[in-house]
Length: 209
Image: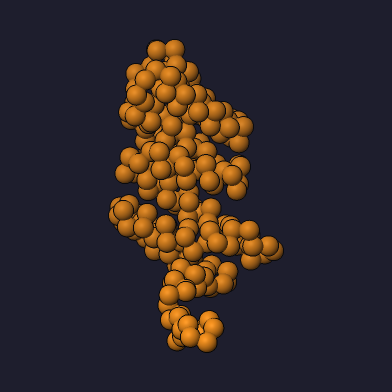
């Protein structure tokens, strides 16, 4: 197709519009993103974390243009967006992409401040960054402090959880130089009296929401 701009100027329509400009509506985006998220969950459960991240990312890209949509449809869009971000963080933790996991969790918490799994996974990511990625003492202390803040938030959400309390004590010991660095497990929740990362906790938080 061509558009005419003046008596002698003809411009091909493909020179004006890219495919990215043809954004589908919120309802269609929700349907497609939900399918992407479901496929991502399937890959995640099969252990294909790279494939899962790809599908969650597709879902997120479909939903972001409609993040401020009002009403019931807007709430559905946000719910799938939050789940896709939280699930992508879980897959990133499996691949030891801790900075990416923390960033996704922060986006979730900007939308839903009390999203437990996002708080937990970000604490995991920060502790892992402290143990393996900190380039100096100040950076190490900053990551540990951020992890502690998230674990304290977990205690607000689950005040009776002994596992969270033990985790907080371990992080405090890291700041004081009394705790050895540990490998952070991909788990979460409060279904045991052990510190976070116990076998029972892994089963709970490894499942996407």
